[in-house]
Figure 1 (cartoon, helix red, strand yellow):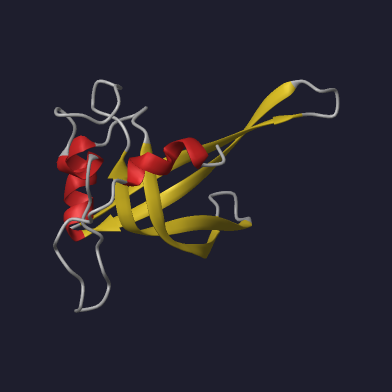
Figure 2 (figure 1 turned 120 degrees about the vertical axis):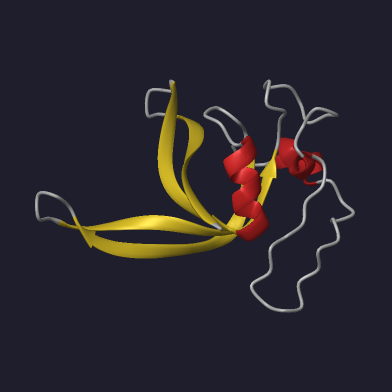
Length: 127
């Protein structure tokens, strides 16, 4: 299976007048196999997720005939950072919230969950 979803990435910064402003960029994310199944089952608008993957560009022609470019992420890992109710990842969270199984594009990928918790470093993320 394969699935696509839109991901908003927001960055808070001070503008020239010292006022806080939020810049938001939208990305299309593509996930495959078990990652796609988890995304289809657990992802909903407003859920916090961490996506690791390869960034790629795609050229297309808009409905008005303009040539455009979009950035897309080909996900190798999607980690749910909160539970469906919006709380921190806990007992009610999907399996990917506390540990994850990276999807490898090669045949040597392991299905064993990672031993580290990817949510430990969330406070250090730049957004």
